[in-house]
Structure formats: C-alpha cells, structure tokens
Image 1 (spheres, rainbow, N blue to C red):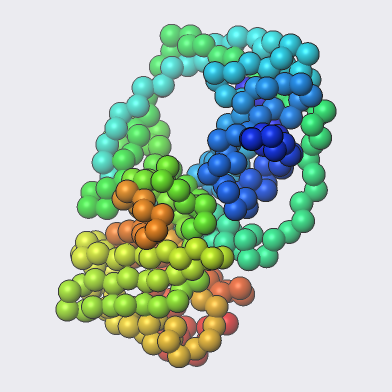
Image 2 (cartoon, rainbow, N blue to C red):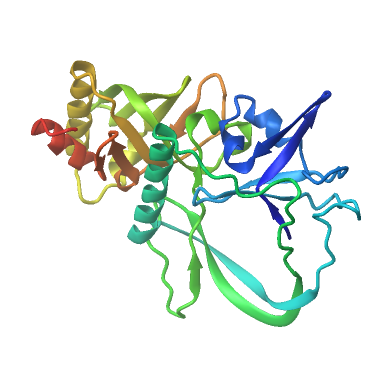
Length: 304
C-alpha cells in the first residue's frame, strides 16, 4: 500500500494541498481528516490519515477507493505470501521499558509542539510513492500475546517465550483529541494551571491547557492504590508540593503522561491516570520523569 506525504483537502468547493505533518495542526482537524484525497491530478481516491502510537503520521489510500488508472500513484502490485498471526489476548500491566519508551515519545511530541522546526518538503503531488506488495496467508502461523492494559493486573507470565505485543498508547495533544478517542489509551501533555488534591479522599485533579484547549487530568482513588513504591500519603504530599509551586511560581511547567479516556466530552475534556509510573513533568529546558522527581526539584528550588 502506497503512502503519501501530502493530500488534497476537498470540501464544499474548497481545495488545497496539506502536508502530512501539518494535518494535526489544523484548527478544524476532525473535518479535515474526513475530506482528504489523493494529490494526483484528476484522481478522486480518498485518503486515510494514520497516526501510529509512536507519533509517526502518514497517509494511505482508503480501501474502498481506487486510483484513476492515469494517476501517477496508481500501481499494480505483486501478491506475496506471509505468515498468519494468532493473537492470544491477556490482561496485564505495561513493562517498565514499555512505559519509559512511551513517555519519551510523548515528551518528544510536546517539545516538537513548543519548539516547532521548519521541515523540508518531502514530496510533490507529482511524486510517485513506492507501492507495497499485497500479501496473502501462506498457511504458517505465528502466536503473539496481545496485552490489554489493566492497571490492576500483574505482568504477563510468558513461559513459552512468545512475542508479547503491548497495547498502543496514542499521541494526542489536547487540541487533537476528539470523540473518536473515547475509551482509548493516550499519551498527552498540557501546561499545569492548577492542582487540587484531597489527601482524605485519595483524589487529585490537575487542570491543564495547551494552546487554547483546556484538559483535566484525574487521579482517582485507584491511582493511590496502584503504586507499590510510594504510599498514598506520600503521593498526596507530592501533589500538594506541586500545587503550591504552581500557585506561587510563574514557571511554565507541563505534565506529560500516559492516560486513558472514558467517553470524550469536548466541552469538558478529561483523562484518567491510574499509576504514578505513567507521570512525567517538563519545562522548556528539563524533564522530570516522576512525581517524586519534580517534588524533590521543587523543594530544592531547582526547577528550570
């Protein structure tokens, strides 16, 4: 399947070319991704905007459409065999490596937003991407454990040394979240505006904002119960330290975290965090990879 570096946005008589890297920056993002078409001259094949969990974005042809035979993107592809994959679903927690890798991806996404770089255009509408060969099964079978994230579950026991596929956590800055992200695993960031913590109820919320979009990070009672290395009273103390810092110090401090959504309400954007290992904090200069790390930095007056 060919991939594209740009697409034509076509809707209600409006037609313009958008680079794949600029799609997520559109103010009408949800509308734009529904009306993307092949940039080949005279071609009306619809394109799909794909977002990988590692932050990579790309365009591909919608399966229900075909390129015009005169389109420079049209290609007959050879059919080659591949092994079938059987997935065994199990509930489990993410590995430490998996958490850290996803946090780094999210941290990089925030820094790219705060410090945008001018990118060299990769292709023109006349450029023809390399087509991928179509594949069919060849009777062989791979067995993979497909992990469903469950904050209350232990790590997966893998006595047969099978490949374990951890669940995707999708990069979504607040302004990119839509109703389509309901009940999803996300990675997101926001500048911290206020922290409200109740030690008695083991509950905390962080109000954040990025661009003009506000978002609330909710740390329910389960968050305080799912942390093995820090007792709940310490977590509350760390949040209180963070709260006082945000109130009294005029510093751009951002929260970057793995989280989950429920049904997304665009008028009251909320995400849920269930374990402290998912948390990190950033300024424009430094990264603090845990709640206790930012609390210690605050106590030492070393947040830069």
